[in-house]
Amino acid sequence: MFCPECGSLLKSKQQKTKTVQFCSCGYSSDLKEETTFKETIDHKDDEIHVVEDKDDIHPLTDVDCPKCQHDKAYYWLKQTRAGDEPETKFYKCEKCKHTWRDYS
Image 1: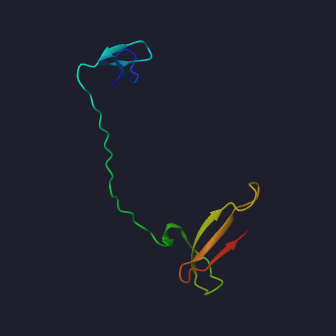
Image 2 (image 1 turned 90 degrees about the vertical axis):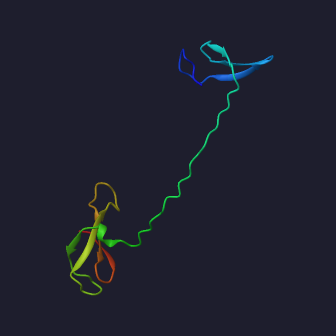
Image 3 (image 1 turned 120 degrees about the vertical axis):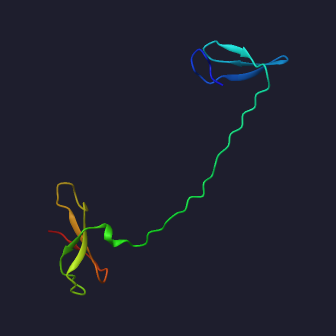
């Protein structure tokens, strides 16, 4: 229940034989009937999908793999050093999944 004056949550207390609802703004009223509150929480069993090693989320480029000599690899950029230095480019071979860096 909320206060009609200020909108705050009303608090309940027992005064002799009756229950009174009151607010910090000064509003109060008698409860005419027994009020009960019930809170329910619905637990949904959502399915969790596990994605294992999905390489195609990175762009593909033409570069030779140093391990198998395949000519295509996925790449991404990451800041591995100080902010005033260039990013490091990582490659992952499309065929053998070998990962290497390019610092240039």
